[in-house]
Figure 1: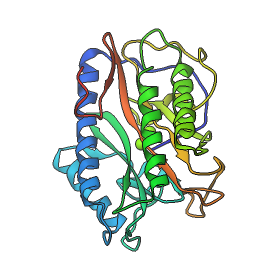
Figure 2 (figure 1 turned 135 degrees about the vertical axis):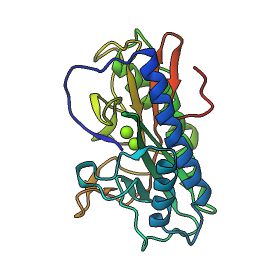
Figure 3 (figure 1 turned 60 degrees about the horizontal axis):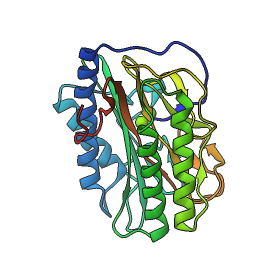
Figure 4 (figure 1 turned 90 degrees about the vertical axis):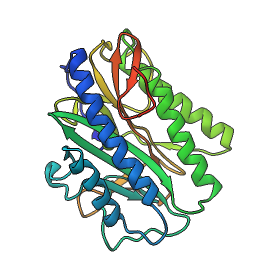
Length: 268
Ligand code: MG
Ligand code: MG
């Protein structure tokens, strides 16, 4: 999930052993998202994808962290096309060829949280949608690269913004960068201090230290960055109806740099 804009102090520090425990939670989330991605085909409902994710999480002995979070009714957020984040999966929402689906998922294992999101092209999508998703993913990775001890929090924000703008230029597009929602600290809870903006000047905010864990999650749109919440009090959509993409990883700061806990291929 994406954290709402808020500010504060006090960032949880994890021991090396606790980061190892978070890795286990992160791998459960990765498995759930891999299964959802494999099943996200035309004719499949987002409600079915939610059931698949929940099954993977429970089979691993973990708990879906989204389910019941401030009353959220499902194990994934399924945000289709103009939905940015926090879409509620439903049996009546059936995927069609050309849809762009963002899936956010979280799990708790032994008290530790993992949180990750992917954007999945359903069938054959427009080149602009593919470009949007790839730009968002690239912005996430540029941010992750800055999740290092000694950096300041907004070094991450600035890297995300810079990568998003440079991808837009390369694509001949203007991507909206969502500002109301962003990344967050994570560990014994899903949303912890600090809130991580996806844009801004570098060199500000708390200094990053070994043992912190941060969820990096840019959200980009093909149009304006203005969003609104639907009457279900969850679903965030673009005001102009433009499509959106969302990518997220949970990242721990180790002596050796960023460890991407929700990426099975990331080595410590
Ligand atoms: Mg998150
Ligand atoms: Mg998330």
